[in-house]
Length: 380
Image 1 (cartoon, rainbow, N blue to C red):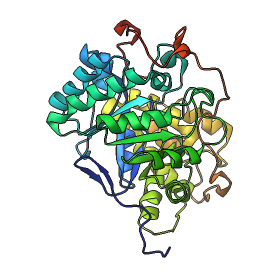
Image 2: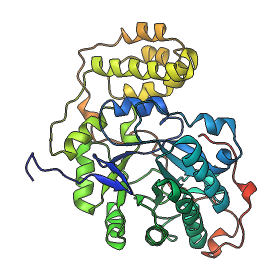
Image 3: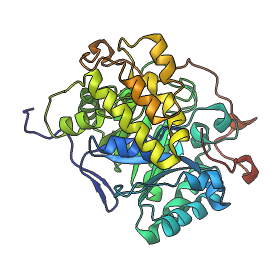
Image 4: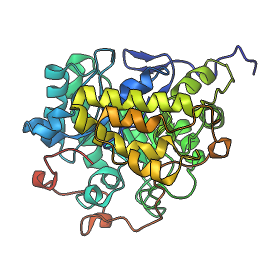
């Protein structure tokens, strides 16, 4: 491959074309409008908002609706929806498309957290193959009049004894989904261990719709290596961009065949931190925005030599003026800690037994759905 060759074609989702085949993974409490704008300022891609519950949308839950905030610069309004009932999913998709101008809907069947899987949702749901098909079909039918593509994200399965990703891919294709994203881990793995890219390649070989690969993309080179190894149509990036919005710049360059990686100095990272806090303050108000920014401090400063006292103070910041004073205490000339390149970010956790409804694993079918099992509120 020469430096002028592109690594992957633009990603097509129905009538949507994403020139750089990179998708920002929805992350609760992280991928709000401020973070999406910050990332988009660095590179191209599809930026998906935080996961929202279908019931919350249908019932007009204030928290759920407050998450439907999009920056004026967001040309593609992309929403990830969670639900366990086809009726609620269908109604929610219609509301999102008809009332909120959403251009892309992604359905979450990959969340491994117990509060979701114990209700049969997230990564537990694809085990019920007919229910999965009914939900996807309902979403696709509701989105069709608006020309909005529907995609799904999933994991390999509940655990190694209950794999579902190949069945899920065939179902998604049969009902008309525009693409399927696969995180190469089971729900039992959570975020531990190594993502199984071979499973992504197997899914690519099993379906005709685009497959997006997810898992262990820490650098732009990981993304192109995944595409080359698996044949996937694009990548989904989650924890790798925490505290590193410039990763999308590197990804855009890499997919364009440019293999230059520019590592920011602490001074440049400091400017990004200030920009992030400013954006959050603009959407949420200064005090709440600064409080929301606190969780990002450790990610931005990971590997840098900033002292514990300064880190602690930054983790308690409540105003932009105070933030400016504290950021002045960081050495702007300090080079990026290259030892952090290619290393996991965020929580890895450890393998654990997946909590599912009683009797859930006894059959691939489900007799009925209790809509009340789905919480009507959204958020992490």
